[in-house]
Amino acid sequence: MRYILLLVCLLIYNVGISQTTIPNTTLTTLDGKSVKIQDEISKDKITILSFWASWCVPCINELDAISEVYDEWQEDFNMELIAISTDDARTQKRIRPMVNGKGWPYKILLDKNQELKRALNISTIPQTIILKDSKIIYIHSGYSPGVEDEFYEIIKENSN
Image (tube, rainbow, N blue to C red):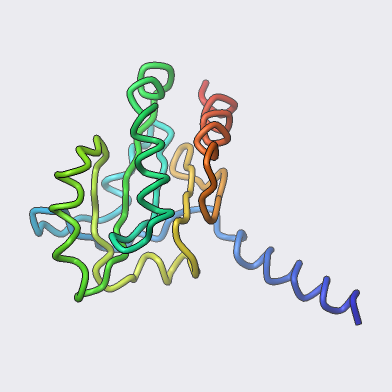
């Protein structure tokens, strides 16, 4: 029985990470402009996509922690972070005040209908995806203090 459960878990894990590129869905800027995610991802930079919501404390903690080292990352590597809010219609009004108050240096996009989140099979947030040449090279779910060091090492290993 344990082996069957292990096999099922491995199959689910492999299905979840089998996608290698980001689907070209439409997102919204804080100013209400519609943009295609592929147009926002730089082809010549490492790009971090951070899926978050205004009500998610671990998400905010992760973005705050990265914010503290973000300038250094940008100096050391050719990279950028796009924070993609998955807030629903009830909580979307909190996004702009939170971003302004935090002073996050990231590009902020809204996945208003959670279309991108669904297309990537993201079931929990925060979810962090690191891309190189528009291809997924790393996925991390959840937040614990110090995870930004792990992200730094992934960026370092893949920047050349």
